[in-house]
Length: 329
Image (cartoon, rainbow, N blue to C red; front, top):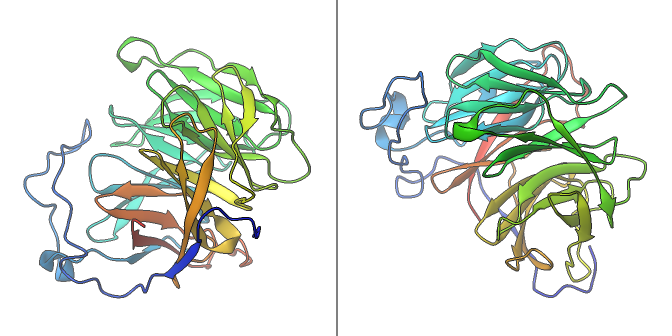
């Protein structure tokens, strides 16, 4: 970490224990996704969940190798498998779930869900993207983005498009959405130019909107730099005052606050941005004893949810995996 910090960087350890009722009260019920039963009051709960305590850690399938996570308007989290691309849905109230979509045999990495109940999936080394019905798991559309070696890593939704990063090739892929969110027949290739220069290792990874909605933010994992990116692919490094976010992975924007998951460092960096995302200040780094190389991040209520990818643990069909919930810093 650079010594030239603008603000004090605090490292806060979050004890993952049974939360108090005040801290872990269930978020209010929200409207169901299309094709899902409407929620009346709270979802059906059992055990301690009836008393307002949702699990802070819950199991994912053994051998699943999770990477991406998405949460929509209802209390369900969706996870993608690096092994075969399966999609697993778990209820946040109980931690229980099931595979809702069989993968294509290549990874499912970054995920986002839209207001129409559609799950957008980054296809990793498969060089593709998919759009699924989040209720049934049915594939609504598939897109071949790259025919050369690629790593389609993450996705963000803007008002009129879905944007995908490729960690191997300096390009973004745009799925322009038509009227009423109509899916396109093909993706648009947007070459990356400007300050973001690809090097050996994992390049453009997590992606977010800018606070003003006029562009995108991309993290370059191997350099720890953040870049503002125009919709034409022109990149400008975001001034962090000498700070950086090495191993930056999933991004989550809330107002002008950007949260960056630094996977192998087991921390979430909180960065306060200006509205145009030209500069930012790292104000805290938060960890948890339950983190084991978390990768991506999603929010529900006042809590963040992250899958433990366990990159430092040799994967086997029996390797255990978990998802972790922590209070939003």
